[in-house]
Image (cartoon, rainbow, N blue to C red; front, side, top):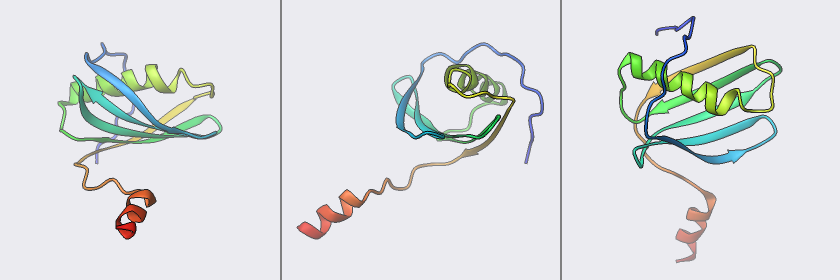
Length: 112
């Protein structure tokens, strides 16, 4: 496991947009879209002065690209939130979506 201790300001990745999935008083979740296609998911949890998050990417970026993305997420979504932030703790995974489940889908299947 690698830890990136200091995060420098990098140029932004082009073609990145965000689709908010939900927002609560202390959490937010986003689908990250790159060039019109799903690129990843970001779950954020706002504490007293720290922000903890999980970033799941659908494809493996180069390290420089990953640092650019984290910097951009920090600028676009975290620092712009109305919450003080002294530390960002972000865990990054690379994987693929297996299933999206909702109780509504289960209910539709039993109604048929």
